Length: 246
Length: 214
Image (cartoon, rainbow over all chains, first blue to last red; front, side, top):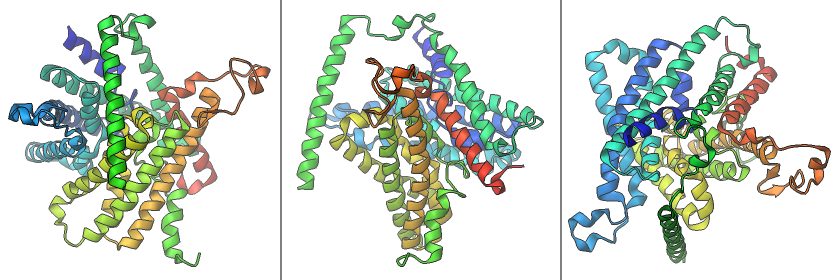
């Protein structure tokens, strides 16, 4: 149940394009034709489905505070989370390279039509964003991380498919000249985002109170603890930086 | 400008208008839209990108003759990631609340296409000084759009600028609110960012006919 909920949430409510604006560059640049949009969308689903669980493992066993405890009790204090950007992006770059090799081998025509945008998946914010949100939303298990990756990939795929279809039709409409091309695409995306906001109540039946989740006291206490911890970290960091600057 | 030759000055002024990274080159849109609900966050983001792009361009330009072209993407990513980690740590130390608001988006500077785009298109082929100017110019062009969008969204959405109540107090009904003005909460939501940028593009292209697409 948890998996299904997260799956639909990541497709519709937290849609990568319409809710968080990730991967907009390739979304705007590759959406002129439906066929190329489908190819890129499929590649994004695949890369997200692989990198999010991989990065989840990295986060869980190397980066998190105390994650290195499997090496021995003396490593329990280590917190390498500041390295997450570099490790995440390295994983992603490797996976994208792999996809590029596979696509070139099995579908040269798709490879040619995607051109520069295939390697650019590595710098598609949707991919890194998937991993960073996975980290900041504290997704609990490997299964959930995989679900989240696939779900957000499908969400991105749907978005680019829809805008490509709209742009193919919109070419025959009479639009004010300065707005043609990029301008109207922005505005149409904005309207689509407004449409997608209506999915917001999907899992709560539109109940506003249920959306703000802290239902039990346990959660509240937990939050307080997290807050206190954050305060501590903040002070520590500030002190460290001051010392370094001295 | 005595310090800069005409050609060098163009590196800074071009990205401001006719070759703006966001509205013309369609690069770096994601962050431009996501964090512009407040002016303060927009400014911090613009400054962070200014730092990363300026320094990164110089570093790549210095290394351009020793990077093998096959692994240049990885090298570029490592340089950006390192600079972004510095920005992230500094923000966490000196502006913790703000770094919480920006959240994952500071990390997403790594995948800001403007940065990779400038490395590929400029720093790999030019000397450090020109690369530095190019980096600054593009980051400023990016920052200007960010600040315009942030300005309108915060002003119309919550009636404040940088947290100051410029339009009066909505609860005590002073200032503009006395005449029945209401905040447009819709401006704070995600879709309006897209529409505001769309309008900026519209205005820019109707002022300069050469930019109109077919």
